[in-house]
Amino acid sequence: MKILMLSTVQAFFRQRAGMFFVLLAILFGFMGGSEHYGFALFFLTDPFGMFYLAGIWILYTFLCGHFISNLWTRPDYSFIYQTRLWPNSKRVSRYFLMALGFLQPILYYGIYILAIARQDKLLHRVWPVFIIYMLLIAAVILVAEWRIRNPQLFNSKAKSSFAWPFPRPVSWIYWSAEWLIREKGLTFLFCKIGAVGIIICTLIYYQTDVYDIRLPAIGFSLGYLLNIGLSFELFFWENEIWLWNRSLPISKQKRFLKTVIIHAILLAPETFAALRYHVISFLEVIQLYGLGLASILLFHIYLYKKSGLLEDMMKPVLSGFVILTFMILYKIPVWGMAVAGLVLSYYLYLKWYGKEVIKL
Image (cartoon, rainbow, N blue to C red; front, side, top):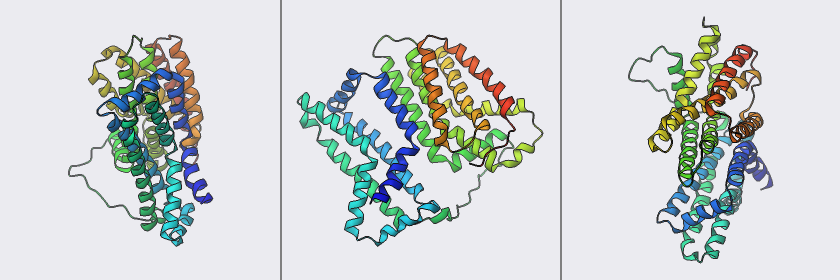
């Protein structure tokens, strides 16, 4: 049981330490007790509050299940299939404890919801929390059970071929986008859901009081930075899979332009979602879009200097986000930071592109 917890649950939180650090910084750095209380009261009193809460928890549980399903296909996790030797009751009970470990954030927030319900005499509205939590625990157990009963050792299962019904265009940008969606579709979906969710929540919070552009600048920057996973996959595609692209007779300037275009398209969905709400002006959205584009480009270009595992890149990302937040709070113009970031990206790309790439 200890090995199961250390190799799976601890690995999940260790690999996503950066994500949890950012969430904690937002929840307890930029939000006060009154905001937390307001959200808890909303979940308890709104007719659809529990549905929204369940939706958020289901997304998190889906992330946990996806992690288990993929982690246990790695060669160094072949030992996990020995759990099939346990009696059914023992295996389910231990998977139950593993599920509790994965769902700790949900459990803690459920306790907070229960405390608020008791304080405001709303205990009659809190019963769905227990049902939702038990269903989510059951979902994690079922994913674990399904994986050990359907082993995919060493990712040896051949992928089915797929042919588009139309000729594929000869386009660098199209090939990159096609590979990203076909091979990393789940990562793409999660990144977009997270980015759009944070931006929409920022706009909703922006309407609750009189704020200047600094609040959406911080929220939008965080939302755009959630795309670092997709930017990392594009870097992996270019430097580990599509290796012959380096021999193409294309100048560094054109390569940089194509990189900018790919990332500009990458950040378009959440930008269109922000424009749809008409909360801030078109000019402000364009400024925030430029700042997000500059931030994600700086991350992507930093990979040319020091490539590695994505979790190893979280420290510079978090440091950069903290620095960016202070710059925003000190009222440095958003458009100025966006232009400076794009110029710096161009300079660093010319400086770092072409260096030897460390195997990922």
